Image (cartoon, rainbow, N blue to C red):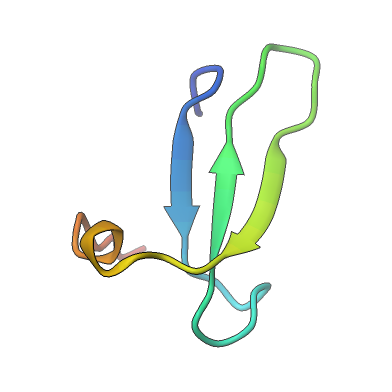
Length: 51
């Protein structure tokens, strides 16, 4: 669950190699915004999550 305007970066198969999925939380009742983006080196080192 994401708070409104909170951003999460997700590495999954829906984006091409070298890109990650950027998910932005929205106000209840609206659809989350999703886009494939390239991470800067400082952003990529922030955290690694494993399922």
